[in-house]
Image 1: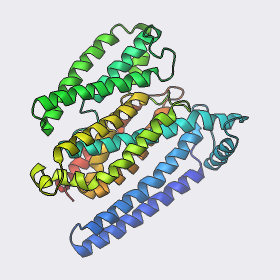
Image 2: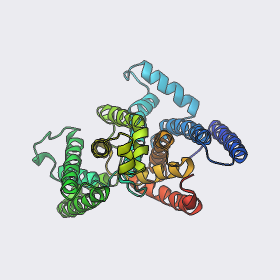
Image 3: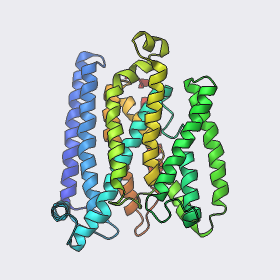
Image 4: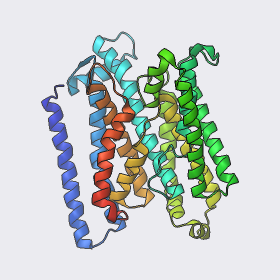
Length: 381
């Protein structure tokens, strides 16, 4: 794949900005001698100065490069503007590639990255464990089972048969039913954070076992079912993108208003109650919201792991545990990370498209291990 000089210049600009921010922050922290709120703000500024331009650059790369052909970034931008001004009709070949094939997919990757990263932050705060991810409540297993049933049985189901929304609707219903089962088990067993984790594990194991049994009868539809389980943006198009994009971003940005309450939850239930927070009700609201956000993401693109685990963890290692900084950083980094992995999944083995979930794990696992080794003892700062 040929990368033009225009792209190289943009990369150098982004790296230069980030380097200046990091040097500035280090000097300020050395003078202050501690990690203050002002220092965390400067760290957040450095993170955003790197991730936001990078996300925009990768977004444009996703529109410029693909198995169907490549364009320069300037040509891509003018093609995109032209296609939008025409309202999607009477387009040239390049405009069709950019507007109908690549743009919805890039928007979907951005939304799912933001959604899964945000859900990961919320789950980790409520359960008070940095090693849980958005699928801890069994949402992925329920969505996976329902989607596999829909793919394997196809038109014989009769429910929205032939509709592009059949699999997403079934997956969302399955994910929410699994979450309901997890909530029921957790509440009946005491309603503590550990109960939610254990309840999710029980539901996930049970539904995963049933999914395996269904896959044995998949026949010639096995490939489609397995590909969905590993995550793919191939089904994202203009007919369904807004049903993913709008809810994912709306719920994610809603979480920014809960930063103070999430900080209180980390202090412990007793202290949070003394500060006037109804901890039990707040926990339930956040768990439902995060599970709904996860279900929306899973329903349209399948199961994409590691984003909701590694992105919040990386942000906490850099910014500490204050959710006023962790949430916006996770939103920016999550969107950038999944845009990058989706771009790699399309371009690394042309003309085949690799499962996005496998790419996120391959890239995320070494990064996570490195940061854990280097920064694990400095987690709070």
